[in-house]
Image 1 (cartoon, rainbow, N blue to C red):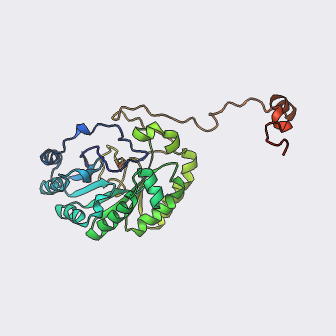
Image 2 (image 1 turned 90 degrees about the horizontal axis):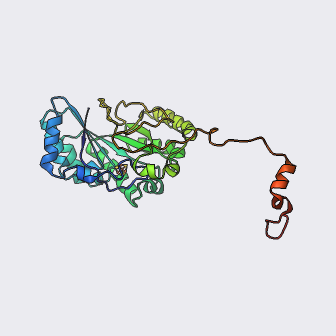
Image 3 (image 1 turned 45 degrees about the vertical axis):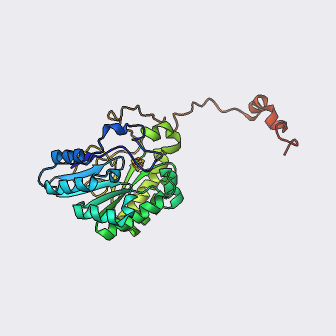
Length: 290
Ligand code: SF4
């Protein structure tokens, strides 16, 4: 599968976005430039995935999808936050141009949870409407969720919502310490040990709901035929952090639990009383002893 990057601009500001800080200058906004890129990448029976930033913000996307189709692309997928799909005419134009599938990012099972992650009030309502419009228009839809400290306990609920909305796949990836998540990784990235049971439960539930499941990074350069939840991906082992040379950032890593603290021998009650007498006298409590 060929990945075609449209641009780094996005109308969300996700707390984990690995692309935060990357220059938008890298990409031309010109429709003809995007079409030229597509034609260079496309051959007969190619599988194409448009990725961003947010590809739907590129005004040349519909024309580029048409160009891919005319160049013989057999399967065209767009990775998107789904917001622009809320406009039915846009969804129809994209479908009529020849796009087959959408990999839509959904970061929560409720509006507050999703909008917290995107840092964009109202994004939930547009994304949910976008998913509905996409299904009405005949797109295959996969849902992608990035696992964070704020949603890992809700993966089951997101899986159920994905299925109710008509998605056929649920694609999960762990937030990585690059871009915006790199700046506040302790707040954003969950401990793998805590997330793992929820993840396992969500994957099992998804399978029982008939959703195809994937665990991996949606924008991986791994070019395999069934992209982003609507197909296989390089598996990313929980607890490992691949180094991103491409993004040029140094990943932070967490010490494993148990290595974090060096504990000395336990203190006796008398030793603690000597060290912290006020705790035992109640001198630090307003009004004296409890
Ligand atoms: S993670 Fe995706 S949807 Fe979120 S800000 Fe980055 S590019 Fe946009």
